[in-house]
Image 1 (cartoon, rainbow, N blue to C red):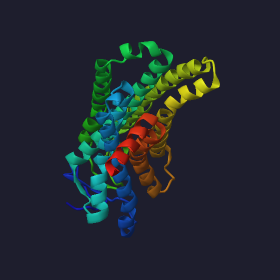
Image 2: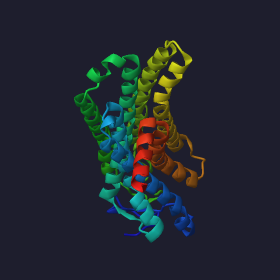
Image 3: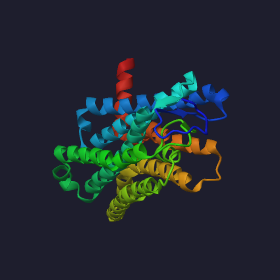
Image 4: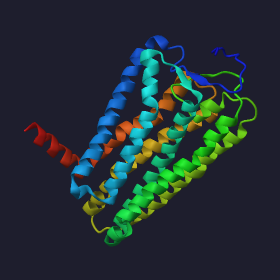
Length: 315
């Protein structure tokens, strides 16, 4: 199959991922921060999973949700990094059409799953602070498991139309994707004909699904802040608010980077292509890398047990 921009075909057997077009000579250098981020992501999230599994005192809803977040982050980063690094290291640019759609499905499914997990974590903090005596009866192991299953099923179902629509469009312009991975809007832009339905559905997922998640989180934290300000002493207010600090940092990092990247697709027509590709990778790679660091540093229970394990292993 020819890789020309004028190729005339409707059912491509594969796409060509360019990585950072025009910077092929620098791909090896660009791969270094990508490789470092993936290493930190893998080690950090597996450490969270190991610490929580090992310490029975951490077998609580908050840490189960944190484990779900760690697994989601591992899937997100693994969905794109191996292929991206193969482009940088081996110039392996071709990706099968079905593999491209599968990658797109996993990326966007687990973005929705991660958003849902943040909602579940906000609900956990709300119950823990506003209804502390009922926390263990409201958030039982069964409820936590159902929360996790519901978030996965929601993400899996909501993103199915992405793939179904992308599969039915004719691709008569080109099979070249100027990106490091198969992102939804990047693939849709290659299709011929009227693809407004895909664009509108993408907006629905952005504002209708994640927007509702953000609204629920805002409502939860409004109630949390009200409960905190009703506490009698400043020390009590600070100590209670600190239990939400890591969660708020992770939420801000995830939603701000994701929203910025999505808006760039819609309104950043005059922005350099390199910046589009950069932001398209940042929102998928940086939060999974920083989440275990944020929770490891700001959550004393995890930090203390991590230090204790390191000291025990080195002694």
